[in-house]
Length: 347
Ligand code: PMV
Image: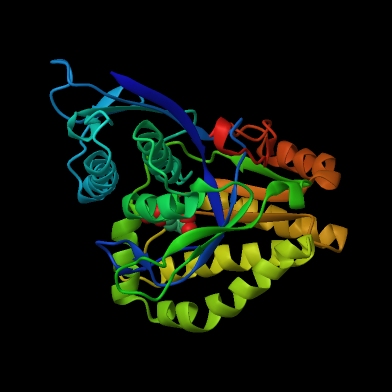
């Protein structure tokens, strides 16, 4: 039996991926940017093993203690590609054990609510792909692995890197240039923090793939967003990170969260991910920023009602104080979410 354990962090997009131009290869309609959270906070821990013993008769996935199906096309594509790389290595080097033929057991645990818009699939697929690549000792760099993880869940490709990460949409039909790249590691801008407000831990009503299809097929605003809004915003956000300009970064992050939820609302029938509590959080952050005469905090919401609030360490007292006063009853607020970057060994 061979076995390896890895962890993968959650990433939260500040420039959202929403829309697929190829749903089999998971190729996006726009490039996106995210921040990878600390491994000490939201993460998936995955142990991957393979064996030729009788107890390993088929590939199996246990997620948070429950046996889940690996039948989906997305999982099969990831497993298939990783196995293909391994069997090519085995064919070239006869001394390698033929483990590509053995069934795999993947045991994955999240330390946060699964499928509640907290990017659980991103961390999950990143950990699975990274874990199997380590088990198979594949000589692939993170960018190459990001292309495999992308086929499991688009946003998973960004969890292969720490710090500030871009998913370049690419232009090739086969997806070979649609991959994650690191804009900057967290050491570049260590003062950034994120607080999470768990508004609801229940499963999201509209899974992201179905939601994207609905938006692409029915929203009038969508094309405008993809063609006119995202490309210049991508460049501006990249620059705001490089220049460590929080004022700009915060504005662009909030604008893009608004824009993403606007195309969801513009879908037919409409998709609502934010609820009344989410909207109260938006109002509070706007009031806070107004009262300070500058952006001290930025909200962003994914495909669910939970809020991620980015701020700078120097404003931590103020931001967490206000969040506590108004939303202290929500779980998650009191745990500071520092963004931390960790490299291969801890991954
Ligand atoms: O990777 P998916 O299919 O779970 O989609 C993620 C979509 C958003 O979280 C809403 C945006 C993003 O870029 O992560």
